Length: 439
Image (cartoon, rainbow, N blue to C red):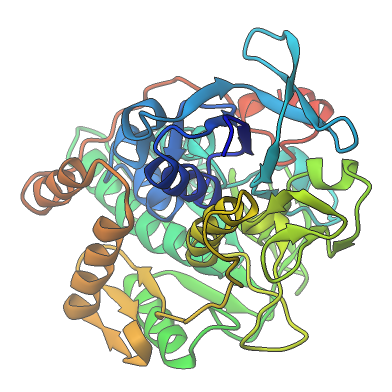
């Protein structure tokens, strides 16, 4: 095998695992280049805990250079792929456009926030797909509670302490569960100060979904557990409900009710990165079509996996694998194996998924999990959930465990860092115009 260049675009679960597996197996026989806008791998499942002040941002940000020593990291945003010329074009952090050739290309560009044509949402909602959004939301929540504590108008106070989460999937459910605990803690702290929080200004969280239950599409027992915990904690779960219009003063629901709020958190789902559309290749609901070996048909030197790829689900013929971290993680390893096979090292291997179950962290000692199909809830499920996350993380395990331990015995720190403004986290990450509108 001659020294060749394997370029991996994106360092999410799929890209990271592809790079990691190749670096261990090839042992320097090929140049492995990882192109990513940031110098870290983001462990997305724990992002709700960052927004709730439980974990520090660096805990869920794993250094690429520190954990992938045999991989060349290139900071940049890829915006073009020349399939005939076997090269990519990207823009580095300082705005310089550059080109790079490849012998093998792995597209793992992931996904971005999914938008719906609802008036006002793009301008007034905040998404939840990256570190900037989590940091902004943490500051925003703390700021709203502090402003509510000093609001003389009861209506303003209630609007500032009302938080509306749209989308009751994994992300939305965990954001609402952790957020309610966070704001209750903040409100208690302000209530102890002179002239503090109004007695009737208990933080209000609403979780909306057009489906008939939370965690739609997942195990029903898991959903029932999550629903029970949320309602007991005081979260208003509204199924069959969504937003009809958003304004700076609140949201109009499809039921006709207007909810005054300063906080609309958009967790309705994701869509493939816009780069996929620019390739001019066949797609399935925006995802790049690949075969069971994660190869792009007609381009044997191009592979794709993770959220950006429509990977055939061999356990359900005619279907495609879901856009989950569990699939992306495993697909990355399979892609690495098949890239090696393309050089004559080993045989190709089709991607076939074996479901290990799901875990949902509901804050405190509460969680819902079904490892290997066994339904669990409460502290036992919480132990399984945290154990799973520690095992799945490629680094920072001790630091994460230490933060969890400290949170169990110390009062949570809640200070506004002021590092991001609303215009820095537009809901449509592909639209600079939206960023300007939010400013």
